[in-house]
Amino acid sequence: MSAAQFSQSGGREERGVVECQKCHSPIYVDKPGSVAVEFSVPCPKCGFRGMYFKRMMHSESDPNDRRRTPR
Image (cartoon, rainbow, N blue to C red; front, top):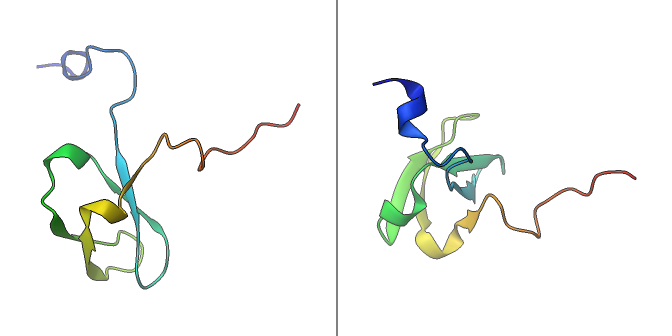
């Protein structure tokens, strides 16, 4: 299968984001709908593996997280 067959919608797939409890860098979760209520993921920056709750995760396309582009 080619890479084009995986993303048929043409847009970006939905990703969830949690913040590392140690270094506060973002940790991206590819399939936020399939994670359990409580899950553990390692931080790609510092390696700390923390326990997170699904309610702590927010969407990457959350309007509160977007940066405004200069006009």
